[in-house]
Length: 287
Image 1 (spheres, rainbow, N blue to C red):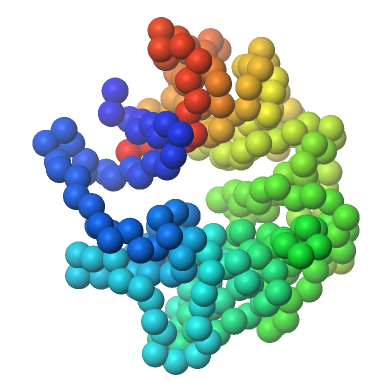
Image 2: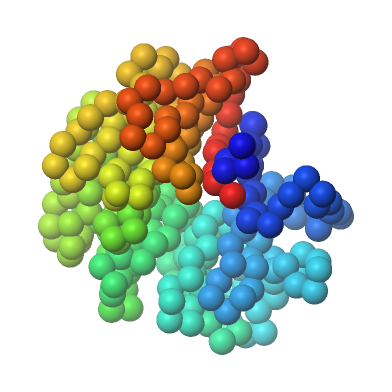
């Protein structure tokens, strides 16, 4: 069953050409990036970026090399997100703000906040999910026309995750109180509230465009754009990941109840790891 690669406890990398005959090799044997790699991302120019607790690096000529921009600001601290804006710029969500790299120059765009996610929004703007570590508060910032503005309607809410659908719509989970959808222009329009009181742990989108919200307990809520339905309502542990493979099967990993799979068009779910006991699976992805 090659359509899914699992990660237990740590991270998962899926490569379309991996087979049983392939060999793995260590790319960063010195391990001097403070060990914890947060994100790997290839941008449109072919570069492969490595974001870690220790900073930013590039995979170049078969090795992981610390990134040192020839001009502009210097980036330090943990890198949480990397985003290609499609216009020659690469944006980095970092422990001390947002940085943009273009044509060899690195510039800090937003400072004083720890930034977990950065996405293109409404074609002309960016959205950043931020945390003020000193005040232990969260915020959503919009970058438009050269300046950052906080979404005041979300200023007093504890945002735990940000997800963007393929059509560009942005959803945020609020700790213990469902999700919010940003409505352009998000700095003036109030967000749409959904699933009040629900603890949403993860997001996904299927091939039909339906939004899947994995809960901390009681399964998954699915929104097709008009109606909410429930899947796996008897789950007691958190849903950690949801993925649809190329054959239309839906895979769900959980924090303590193993792995579930539903065939395309079927109503019943199968627990494929039942004989292994209560497994904690951190992620699932297609190859």
